[in-house]
Structures are given as C-alpha cells and as structure tokens.
Image (cartoon, rainbow, N blue to C red; front, top):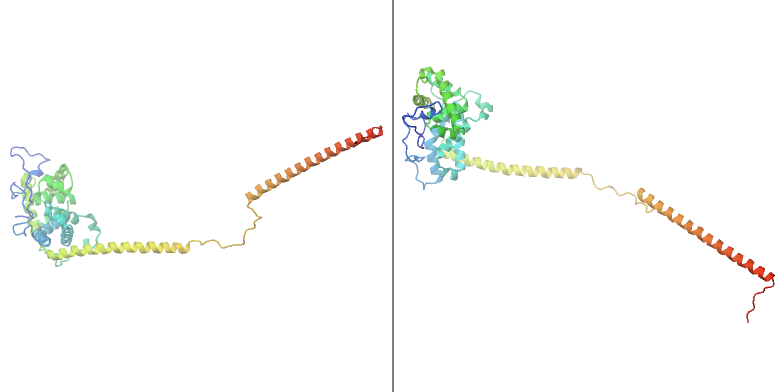
Length: 356
C-alpha cells in the first residue's frame, strides 16, 4: 500500500555484508516497494500533458496528481484537516505565482511538498483562534470516519513527537526517502536527522509495544511504520478544490498584494504631505518690523571702539595745541630779546647805519 507518491530519485543502498551501525541504521530502513535504481522518473505520470502543454494545463496535471497525497501528509503531521487543506492550497498558489521557475525545477513535487510541510508545521498557527477550537466538518475537510483504537493510538503517538521528529519520520519511513535526502529537506545535518529518526522510532515503540518495533531490525521498523502510517492516512477523507479555483486564488492574491502595495505607498505620501503642511503652519514667521534704528546708536562693541578713537583724537589735538603754544612763546621771547639788544645799542650812540 502506497501512502504517498513514491520518490522519483534513486535510493541509496549499502553493501549487503556491511554491518549496520546506530548512525546508519535509519538509512537502511527503506521502503520494500521503493522504485529500482535508475534515472530519475518524471514528476508527472503518463497521463500528464506533454511538455508543449499550456502552463495552466501543466499546473492542473501536477495539482491533480499530488494534491490528495500532500493533503494526507499534512494531516499525518498536524492532525488538523482544515489546516492541512489550507497548507496545500497556499503552497500550490505560491507555485503558480512562480510557475516559470517551478516548471523548470528538476523536482516540482518535492519542492511543493517542502512548502506544504513548512506551512503546516509553522508555530504561528498555534496563535490562531481557529486552531484551538474543535474541528468542524466543511466541504473542503469532511468529517473523518471513526478511527479504530490502534489508529488513534498511532496518531496520538506521532503527534506527541516534536515537529522536526514528526517530519523526519514521515519523510524517511512514510515516503521512503533515504537519510541524506531527508536531511536535505529538513535542512539539518545527517547525524542530527538520524538521531531524530531513531528517537521517533523509540518513542513510538515505547508507546505502542504491540507494533513489535523493539525487537525488529531497522529495515523491518521502516516497513512496519510505513504500513501503519498508510493505514492511518487512508482513513482521512480529502476533498481538494478544483485546480482552476486554486489558480484563480493565487492570481487574486497577487492582485491584492499589488493593490495593497500601491495603497500603502499612496498612504505614506499623503501622511508625509499632511505632516509637512502642518509643520509649515506652526513654524514662526518673520519678525514684525519695528522702529528704524538710529544711526548714532551703534552697537555696544562699536560704541566702545568709537569712544576710544574720539579720545585719541582729542588727546592728539591737545598735544598739538600745546606744541603750538610753546612755539609761539619761544618766538615771542626771541623777538623780545632782539628788541632789547637793539634798544641798548641805540642808547650807546650806535645808530643804525643809514642806507646810501
């Protein structure tokens, strides 16, 4: 029984005579009905459209081929049917938005599977109110049939594991990927992925001893878990919407995002303009014109400088006046001395010689 679409990549094998160790034991747990080694198989089956088909036809074929299996994978990971259906729709819408890139990808189903798992296991879903209430049947997620006690026990055991351990168990034991492929998809190292897988198997073996995992070899453990996970997923009814509805939803999402971006840009522009106008109205204007300043009222610094200049000029004028007065007195004394000498000469009978 196939739980999901078998992987298209070849499986890694080990030498028959090599002993299995604890680190490579999960690698040996390959599915018994895995495809034989050889070139990678095409991602679509024989009923898929030819490479010359339109993008919409190629997308519809990919969706019809893989949407039900991906929905069951998400249900096994989360135990929540509406969330699983939402994860598949959002992932395929994202694939349609990037279809030119997705169409040339070597493994489109694997890429979409990674998006489905990451969306379904995102921790922010726990903050959504709808994830805490009881699930109600909807056309997209019908009510599941009553599960048997072994199936409920397996479901509870799987959901009790941390999300990374659940994903590693599903990829390796449920889908049949080898250890390196599982590590690459969960973005972890190979030893860390092997540890998660070993721990997950041990937890399920402890909680469900009737499965006989404790005494089984790693290969047999993978076979048992693959069969039981397939039975658990088969009880989950899936009703994926039409491929055209998913494509139209992706196009509407792009349109809304574009309109939202333009609207946000316009809102920022309006808010910026309003803020500038408001600030321009509250800024102080130029000061009111007052009485003209007097020309003779210089600034304090200029007045002090001008006072010192006037004092220097006055002192210089006084010094010149004193020098002029002294020169005048000197000339007067000299003239007085000359007159006295002439008078004495006249009194002595010495007249002034007459001119001829």
